[in-house]
Amino acid sequence: MRFRRLRLSGFKSFVEPAELRIEPGLTGVVGPNGCGKSNLLEAIRWVMGESSPKSMRGGGMEDVIFAGTAQRPPRDFAEVVLVAETAAREELEVVRRIERGAGSAYRVNGRDVRAKDVALVFADAATGAHSPALVSQGRIAAVIAAKPAERRMMLEEAAGIAGLHVRRKDAEQK
Ligand code: ATP
Ligand code: MG
Image (cartoon, rainbow, N blue to C red; front, side, top):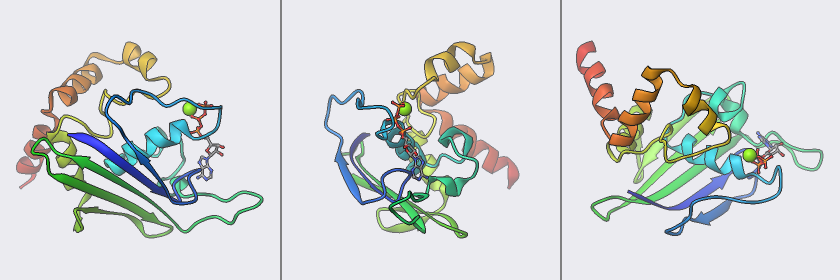
């Protein structure tokens, strides 16, 4: 799977709709302190289903919504769209939107889906919100300090078998 485009609206510091093309060979984002580099990476993780506010550097999930500044009022919602190309060369469009007081909603290619469905789409493609391919600030130190079980989870995600655990847990509950 290859990521092609990222669209953000009302997400953290990206208050105005912004679209970024993700060209082959992109390996990093540079810019002055506070310009939104980490926010971009968080947007990619968020649209893939990140469910922990802490790993989004927030206290609650709604903290990803633009909170306003002295010049601009806050927004009511945040939306991130990730356009990717699958291994079968089909276009995949994943949308996650959060509204104040209403929680998150996901769409895949225009269809309403559950968070779990989005997680499986990316887990099967050996990527996802916790993919080792996304190296955010402090991540290297976290890998070094990780417990063996956590390190095994990283390896399983890289190998693309993380989705199997979700399906097994599902089957066991039924
Ligand atoms: P550094 O080089 O220091 O790592 P960075 O480019 O990674 O900086 P980010 O951490 O992505 O910068 O962006 C920080 C900016 O995003 C801050 O100005 C912060 O106020 C803003 N920000 C974060 N969350 C929100 C929000 N919910 N609403 C408005 N602004 C936000
Ligand atoms: Mg940063």
